[in-house]
Length: 236
Ligand SMILES: [Zn+2]
Ligand SMILES: [Zn+2]
Image (tube, rainbow, N blue to C red; front, side, top):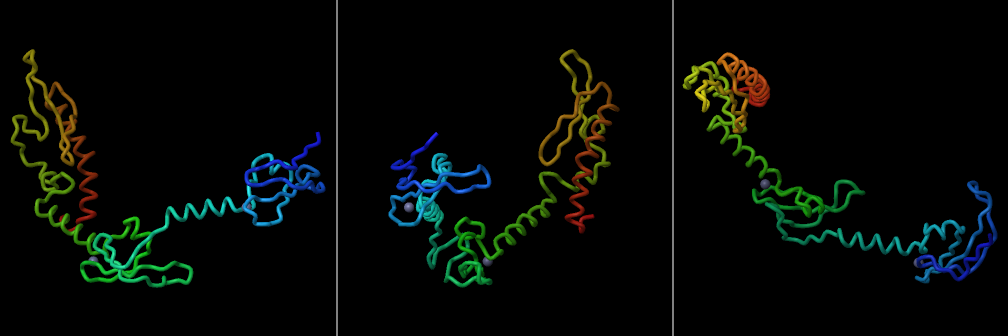
């Protein structure tokens, strides 16, 4: 079948001249066409039939360039002197450490420290202080935890003293007696971990309930204490 593409448009390209067939290692010989782009760039454009009809090429390259420029425009970061980002205020643009890396902003933190930050880090809020904020914040949390001896909703001291007699009627921590509507005595086991109460089951005997409680204790608490002592060796 003879194809004539002359005069046809493919995106911004118009086919203006039929050229000779050229050898191609994939499918033998291919017909080539000379095209002109509507942007008037005057770049020599010669494409085989397949690339045109498949929509593989649509311009001299101007389309991609425009598309990229648009994308860059959207993500362009405009930062000016004296702008505030968290605790940081921009002072001036300074060259990066390496030739290749872009410019950075010299910023002054509210604490008085000065650091340089990349525009993207500022713009996207990845860096909001010289590091003092995080330090101060985590110290506050740490102090609070230790004041109350309270970590992640669980009292480590309470876990450690688990052999202390419980003040409930069963004498077993986490096991309580319930009388059902039919007047039957049952044993409820539960465990409170990280501020959440977990129901462990209803049992006919105190022994069964105590066993369930002990099993849960080792499951929940031992793992927790292991980590707790790793993070707070002074408390061990
Ligand atoms: Zn073009
Ligand atoms: Zn600071």
